[in-house]
Length: 104
Image 1 (cartoon, rainbow, N blue to C red):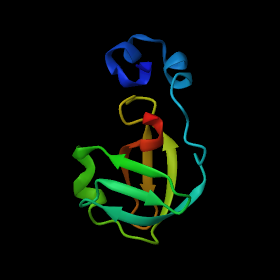
Image 2 (tube, rainbow, N blue to C red):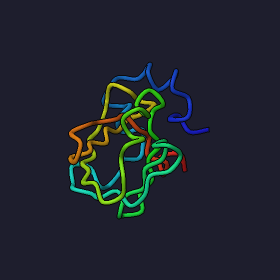
Image 3 (tube, rainbow, N blue to C red):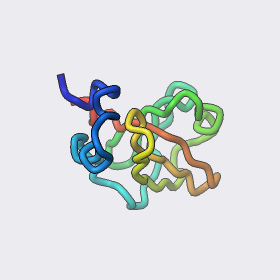
């Protein structure tokens, strides 16, 4: 089992090791466009095929997001379970999320 699938062990590592132990989404700090939003904002697909699962505490924001909204993706090192911030430029809102390719 990968270390990233055991967050309690991951948190015991120094921050630098935590960040290296997870695959990194290659589209960080680039502009993106939402392709589709599914599950009342729970799953966000981008134009590059990336898929993000939004943390449930932010669904009240992402459930309004729609295809063609401009996005930025940034690292969120404070939350290893949802290590990305999806920033919707259209609404000036951000949510914490997990890149689903991270789980492979």
